[in-house]
Image (cartoon, rainbow, N blue to C red):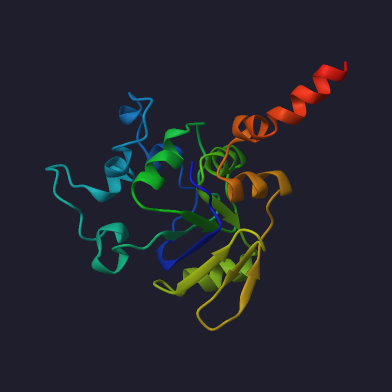
Length: 190
């Protein structure tokens, strides 16, 4: 995992509440344990028509969504079954952050462990972000703030341990491996 310190991008807005993990990545694509290639199946049943052509009405297929790395989703984003493939698919599709007024706990934890920022903001800020598709945002992990195009900031909460792992680009195991010399010294004293 690469360190996640700052994400700057335009937003793409998907104002649908209760987007579940099966909508993010349908179960029929969970046949792999690798991340590469899952992005083409992100929101598969919304992005693609039955004949395999792109659905021009789906927000991620529109020209203004090209290279947008911040997804502002509806409330209760990532609900449903636990599947690590959901954040993998979003990351592989170029999404670096998801912002909502509510993100399902398991999805949020899986996302943060894999380097996908899953950010919960207050309902008023969320409504304002939903109303401003394409707005340029800067997300700063160290300060847990989102800076809007007009300079206003929105604060969000990250567990200090999770923040440090993101900044270092490690998961829990990587965090422990970084501290192996300290652990070995401690064990040697026992």
